[in-house]
Length: 554
Ligand code: ADP
Ligand code: MG
Image (cartoon, rainbow, N blue to C red; front, side, top):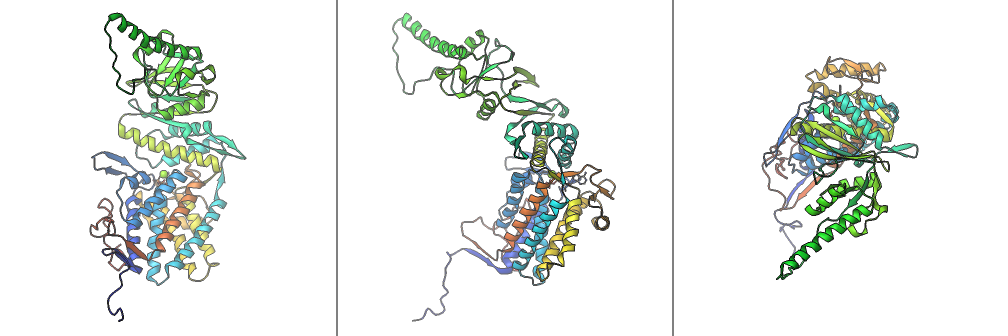
């Protein structure tokens, strides 16, 4: 007998499947929703988002990647856009909103092309060609910057902080970022390598933001353990211990029977002797500062103080590693094995009072450069936003130093790329050309959004910008204060080339990947649909809202 009319099921029952235009339309709608969620924060005039998590904790920020990380995104295509932000953050340290907004715009324009019956594969090819050309032009219009160019680097730092809500002395912060990065930059071939792990950020509430300062050294967020210890040790010899200066508690319960007071004394005496021997070992190594990752017994603290040794306990592992690198000390995990060879050196170890807390500053170490930034500010939210701003600033300065090239911001570079891509489009030919041109148009979403967020008329602004660039003004961008075009070099709005390059690459990758999906198969265990691709905050609702067949609403 033939199988007849019985349908053949290849997928598990309950599996959701969406094919063709319906699948693509839903994916695009979800990705666009993500882009729309961060769009209004782009640029210095962008607004902030207040994010409240399930515990009621509040974050106020303008930082694209922070917003997206906090949002509980569930739709798979929306998640891909969140990935774009994360990659951008990892690779370039800034430009997360730009990348996501660009990806959203590429998809929105692709939607229009699909309606004109251009196949997604053709669109993808056109986008790829355009992306490659854009990267080529980006390199052409970029300018050189050297590690000695402190002014230029400071402008790059200041530009990255322009959009942060907290109004603070950006020049001061910019200078701190530049000094920190140039201090830890290591020559590598004809260029430099910057490991931002060598820059430590310490947050201490209180004081004012202008008290934020750069310390050439390592700050340990701990005080000395005993008031009898010195507060300052010049030219210190530093021992780093990954062991406790305590008597080990026995692993098994042992019972000691004492039936005579002299025995008790002997027992206590033995404990004291053991601690004494540990401190003697430290002293024998020549160390006059001991930083301990574990605990220090009260009695040992007393002995150390008597010897004039500065001691800190429960130091974070990451701090220990920084200290080892900076001072040349070895981290020793058995007190009895500590020798003079393991001891490291610095210029000064000092306890300083910052606000209500006492911290240990280790400065003037010669072995390797380590710098710390002590962030001060009135409230926790302010300090956190300063930290995020500084993080962006450090990253942009680092990648600018590594790549040695920068471009003009404020939509100037985006417009120049758009124009040159349009000029080049005729050489592409075929249907890909239409997608190629759409890519060029999509780049203009950057100046357009910057203008929109500043309350300017985006159409007027674009017309002005196009005119300026046609007239050869490569650096013309949006002056958000006046609504006119301006030479971004004069406004000092500049960015490392890597931010732009990465934004183009990851936005294209995400758009192309989403365009190539024409079949979504979701297993039953995926989150239950919550009715339509809700806006951000409403939850993306898993695969919910699939099956509309048509493209998502605009
Ligand atoms: P992202 O997360 O993409 O870094 P931002 O909110 O930091 O987003 O905004 C960055 C954009 O703001 C860049 O396009 C940058 O060129 C632009 N920008 C920064 N400062 C200015 C300024 N003073 N005038 C115009 N545009 C600016
Ligand atoms: Mg930024």
